[in-house]
Image 1 (cartoon, helix red, strand yellow):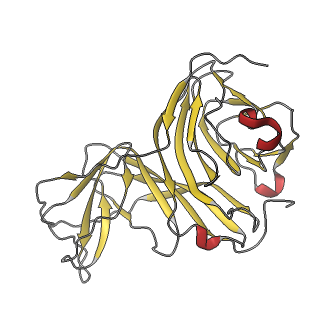
Image 2 (cartoon, one colour):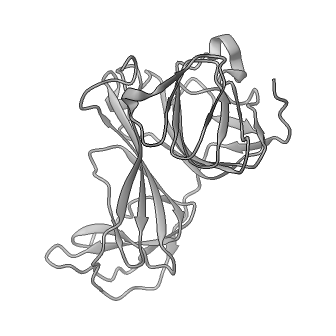
Image 3 (cartoon, one colour):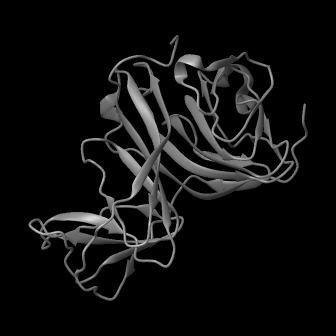
Length: 292
């Protein structure tokens, strides 16, 4: 058993920031952000619990040669998924875990038995379901560690409202995290698909607003974006009285511009390309992760 060292505690809450900016002149938006799907998993009808606290969406960075432990303040979720963008994570889960290697598909997922050890690297995804809280308590997620360089991950956790939402890791930083609640409970009792998408937003490009029909949460990982309104009958956007600016680490939300025509758009008005991460929860077209 590895011995954890430094503990860093954080509360699962995200403070949203709004900055009122100088009005902007209308200009053409001639480029659209490029999406890349990082993971897409389909879970059966039991995925959304009766008592739902929401789906936690997060970015985690684990430093080199860190042991990652969980304190008694952390209660595991129903489903726990992580996509490794860079670096490596060693895992020794206490429940059966699925690992999809970079470039592979869910149909070819590796099954890691409880108690076995494996290493996941860049482009790999691992998913723990039926986390054995009753049997193992706060240690139910097993062990994780970084065998080499810093590991950068994005992931989600489906949480029950009867479980607490504070957690403690050793050797971890969390640039952003927040909980998706709206619309998720309505998907209870049916198979659902959860997807994480990365949007690369070049200078001057626009990021489309997500569909109102699909529960979605977005975070700006780097760069700057400004929310403005696109005119319905032209390829331009209007100058808003109070455009809303978002900086890195902030959750993207939809400002209310009651008097503005057209559709809202998030535009990269900063000095560097911007990167946005998005979690979507939607009804599954077909299939199930369990037993597939």
